[in-house]
Length: 496
Figure 1: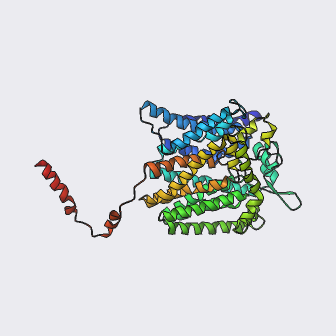
Figure 2: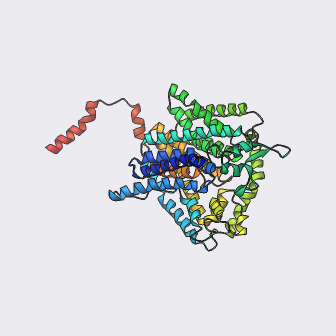
Figure 3: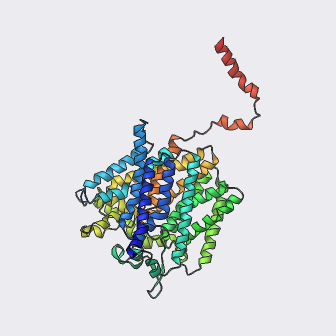
């Protein structure tokens, strides 16, 4: 009987997921399928992975991505619609090609075992093309922003609950939680907990709804500009209705337990302020940033001085940030030069990173390589060429955001696109504290927003009005009759 009870929820969940995958493949409203994927990634992906302790759970998100992309591609082919290459698509395809070529790197694990390595680099690349092709209305952008806020706020609430638990209580949530909290298996010697002055475990470092520490704060960094954009666009009681989401995102930040996540939030908000100021939304955004800062500061005050994130936050003040970075990350960053010169063509995909955990017979030499930064991870896996292509795409997107968002005529769209582009700056900084292209939520966010911005800032960008056109609204309005007279005379002349 007990086995039947245990099998029931698992069977129901499997059937529900299968129906979701079929729906994603057959549904013609791709924006709705993408919304379902976003909710799954933000609310269920990390939790289910740790709850079950099975790495196979991560394949579920790949099934959804392939179902959406495959269904869209099949309908495009059958309807004989043209499939033009998006702007920046050449960089994306070149990056993907380098990843595939590295599958045959003689120093790598080989084509069979290296497939997991290919996956960790390109599993979310289809989102670039889907974001470009199917995010072309303002209402769709608004839904994306709302999903980001909902997922981040929910993760913040869960992160706060986890911060109140003892290490053993959180470890009891599931095998994946136990492995990370107690420091066993692949996390031997690296438990996600803090210790008191006597070396006794004192508190956990929450995961939120993600699969590792700080995931909740990273989701908050992606969603915080979106929340401010929603608050600035809302009116009256609608702003009050957003307060619970603001509290949830604030909780995600203050319970992050990691300096990297806090710095990512800080850099993201600076970037948002700069882009918004250049986009003629500066005053409103500054007001939103001020309100957000007050809420976060109040949350830190409620948690008290003993909170682990509070103590970490003190080390990223302007006077301490450089010394903190030097102490914790300088050694990892210094390794980049060594790896770039020793392995300019990389060691092959699947050599390091999450995919390498599946290789029990991985060479001892690769087990000791430092992959604590995104840049070490990329140069070891796909070499300097792959790294340069990825950086070129990053900096191209950031340059477009700084230059072209301000040219959009719609002020609401300027604010919303600024909110989506700002986290790209934060993710570059986050790359100095860990891998971002092989984790959720940073990886799917990057590829999807990259495609979205490629459409709005390149394909659909609005040219700035001429100086004469900008002065015309200040002049006296013309009579409607006079405005039509030249057209009428021209038509009469043609008839004559």
